[in-house]
Length: 225
Length: 252
Ligand code: HEM
Ligand code: FES
Image (tube, rainbow over all chains, first blue to last red; front, side):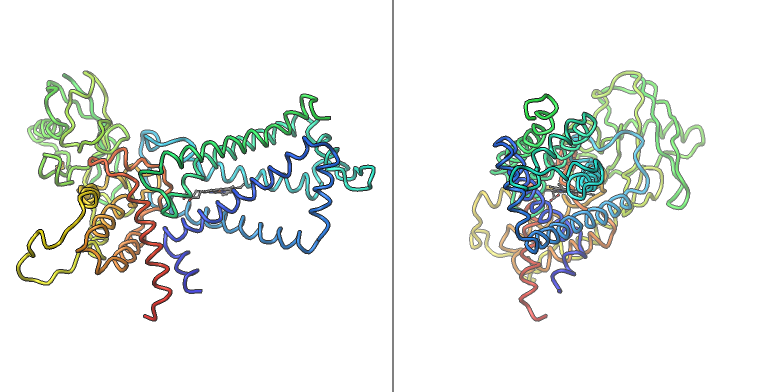
C-alpha cells in the first residue's frame, strides 16, 4: 500500500499512473479496432466475434470491470493533475498560450473530457442501446445478435456517423501527444530514441484514427451495407 | 528607434497589479533590453516617478537573475538567450512590447517585474548538493569520468536557475529545473552517495512549493537560455522510479 500512496502523493507518481493507465487504454483501443475491422470480413465474422465475447458472461464482466477501473483511474488522476496545474498559475499571461508547443499537447484535458463524453454516449448507444432503440435487436440466420446490421443501421444516420468521426479526431489528438508522452513520463525516452518514439506515436495515432474512421465512412457512402 | 512598452506594475505581493504604458523614444538597436528599461527608469526618476523594478545582476547571461516575459515569451523571442543578452535590434521601430513578470504561484511578485524565486532555493536545499569531506580536493585524474558522461553532466549543469522553464510552462512546472539538477549530480561519481535520496527530496520540495506537473509539452526546452533538453526530464522520471522502487525494499 505504501507504494500506492507514494504514487498518488507526488506529481511524478501521478504521471506514472497517467502513463500506465493511458498505455493500457491505448492497448484496449487497438484490440477494439481489430475487433471492429472484422466488419470488412462480412456479417458472419463480426457477428461470430460478438457471440464469442458474450459466450462467457463472467469473463466479459470481469474485463469490463477492469477496463472501467483503468478508465476511471486515468480520468480521476487527470482531474487531480489538471486542478493542481491550474492552481500553479493563478494569474494568466495577457499574451497567448505557451509558445513552441503543439496544440494537442496543450489540450490533453479538453480532448480527454470530450473523449469521456463520447465514451459515455458510445456505451449508451451500442452497449446499452438507448440512443437508437431497436438497433440492438437485429438477429442473423444463426440467431446471434447481428452486430453487422446494428452498425449499418447506426451509421446510416449521418449525424451519428459524423459524431463518431469527430470523436475519432479527438482520439487522434489525444493519442498523438499521449503515446510519446507515455514514454517520457516513464523515463523510457532519451535523445537517441526520441525521433523514433515521435514517429511511432504519430503513426499509431493515425492508423487508429483512419481505422475507426473508415467504418462510419464506408457505411455512410454505401460501401458497407 | 522608438518603442512603446506595456509594463506590469505591482506595488507588492498583496496589491493587484496592472499594465502601465511607458514610451521609450530615442533608444538604439544595440541596447540590451535591460538597458532599455534603465533608460525608461532614468526618465521616470527625473520626472519624480517610481522607477520600474526588475531583477538583474551579471548582465552577461550567466547568473539567471534577469527574468522578464516579453510578448508572452520568457527572455523574449530569441532562442538560447537571457533577457540581458536580448538586443533591441530584434524589435521593430514603433513596436509595442508587453513585459510581464514570471507568473507562477510559487513565484510571488515582490514588486513590478521582480518575483521571489526562493522556491528554487528550497528545492536545492532539499538535495541539490553533494556531501564532501573537507580537506584537499582530490587529484583530478584519480576520478576518471568518461568524456561523454562529463559532457552530458555539463549540459545539465548549464542551468542558471532563472525559472524561465516555470514561467513558460502551461502548468508552471519546475520539472526542467529539477531534472537538470538531479541529472547533473546523478551522472557524476560525486553525486552517487545521495543519489536516491536526492531525487526523492527534491521532487517532494518541488511539489510542496506548488509547482504544477509536467505535461511534456517541451515549451521549457525552447525558452531555456541554456537550451537544456527535456531529455533530462525523462532521466529524472527514471531516477525517481528507481528511488521509489528501492524505497519499498528498505525497512527505514
Ligand atoms: C480512449 C481513451 C483514452 C486513451 C487511450 C488515453 C490515453 C492517454 C495516454 C497514452 C496519455 C499519456 C500519459 C502521459 O502523459 O504520460 C494520456 C494523457 C492524458 N489523458 Fe488520456 N486517454 C484516454 C481518455 C482520457 C479521458 C477520458 C480523459 C479525461 C479527462 C483523459 C485525460 C488525459 C489527460 C489530462 C492527460 C495528460 C496528463 C498530463 O498532461 O499530465 N484521457 N491519455
Ligand atoms: S542578468 Fe545575469 S543572466 Fe541576465
